[in-house]
Length: 371
Image (tube, rainbow, N blue to C red; front, side, top):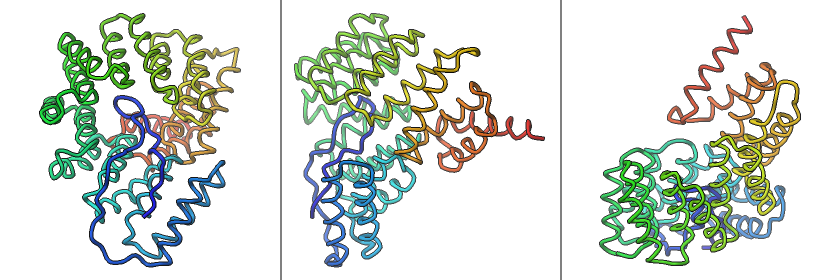
């Protein structure tokens, strides 16, 4: 069966880790419907040759036809889920990836993709649930055991994350990914010295690991050593020029520190390298919004354009929907435009999403204003 060569297109807990390269053992299933199989192959080819949104939409349509013709064709569900996730339709992507996992519970790339989509939807426990059964049955797999460390950490199960990292390191004592995740777990516990030692071990294990460099940068940031942190991020960018995660980390730090002009520079640079990077666009929108003033709406309007650009490509992007609602409600003073966006966000986001409660409050306040 042909597989899509696309990553899920997500920033993982350690940054964009790239697509899963592990071998997947296909389950024993009934022979695929030849019509469905043909549609799936056409969909994969269309996706691989797509140069614009219309090409990806055609691929999605073909894959939808494939799963309609044969609901048991797990590769089609998987490929469709990947494309939908890349488009920002995370809710539908999750449903197809969950179906693929039910049909092929021994497929590692399915488990990893489903976990990452759930993480993007703000469902940290769901991300763990997507990986844990597979890892239990396949503890020596190539990527899922490491991904589980990050999922456990993000669900605030730090001790379990540490235990999982230690299990991986028993098999692969110099795995820089596991060492980096273990370092971040201890960082979350506030044990900076231990985190730093583990980060150094990750760097020693692989002197060309962008993941290890990014982790070292995050630890130095928490130690207040911004200059060294930025050098680590720059090194990560050198090691993986196509990965904008390190630059986005720098930009985010500058944004949170209130250094908006420098944050704008970094976000713009990330967008130049990857024009359709939604995280970079939303980060730049946040930085420009912070530069706006009551008597100077230019930054707000650029932020609006950036967010709308994301929503044009990804109509169901939760972060873009929420941020546009906030922009309209709190900055551009357009409550009538904000109200349906908050409602759309609440309709699509799981209740576990970090912004869910705030969106409910904002929507209630806007409804009260109408009365």
